[in-house]
Image (cartoon, rainbow over all chains, first blue to last red; front, top):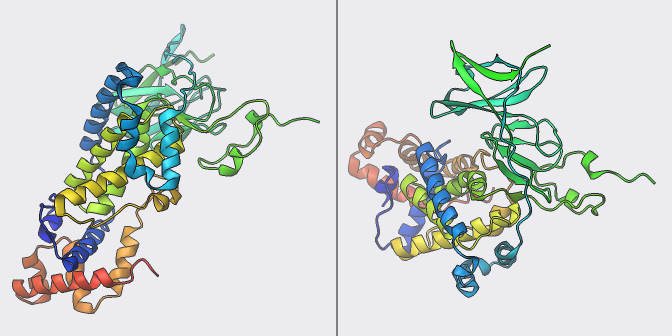
Length: 217
Length: 193
């Protein structure tokens, strides 16, 4: 059991004596204690994201009454055992959706020009780089070899978003609202959910990232 | 009297509970809600994975359990639930998923999740784990040879053979030492200091 753990393998099924259970618990704690050992694998995260996305769209297509409420609550019975979490779970099953504004699409200036906003190396491997010109503030990044950029102004009231590097999102300093670096709204405290951030056209040229922005006057 | 416009209110922190208790004025501001399931996933997956990893200590099982939590929560959990409710529901689901895993795998719950403790911890999915610090305390409380074998094997990832050679003992001795050290560590008051 301990050797499987040390080899990074799943724990094999079996039965343990009580003192072996304690030793295994200590081993798990030590194994999890290597700095950075508990960071999830990028490939796993992307795969599960896809799985959740397709399962959630299947859920959305199904009628809301498809899962009998009684079955839902029975399924969450373990959760409901803890009073606080039980109340939370109950609420989470029943609250009503908030209205939301439509996404705002792409910013394509009528009289635009390509402007250097970052070096390609600044955004390699999914790093996010903020840029600001006289007309536009935005964030540029790269994912799987594709460059993308979004407006850096919140679609609610135009407050300038702050990059939250640790959580990989753009936070609005004015109201608790956050967007993904792809511009999608992640969460918000507002009663009408703000739309996604507009996309900005970007391209790579001679090791530089260029964005299509309004011509400077 | 000039009433404050809540739009001009300084930004509350991500979990500024005090701000939520302010009476609503011009704008009714609710709790944070997610835009969709993708947002729920992105905001919570790292936290749930790290929680599971700390409970099972290996990547394949932690990945399976994380997936199980999200798949189990997908049906009953509404996207319109508040961010706090979503977090609470996912942690509660993680608790039952982990309990089921141990029951199936070993017939006994080797580790458990305490939802209250989890929900009290700060809302920072990428915050450095407290586990290394705790492990250092446990190791520090062990007799020298026990500490050494566990450090070599668990923190420096040496094979039994390498660890035995480093400590100048036979492989059989290293194995016995490791077993005793783990049992000793299990009794060590690592969380109490």
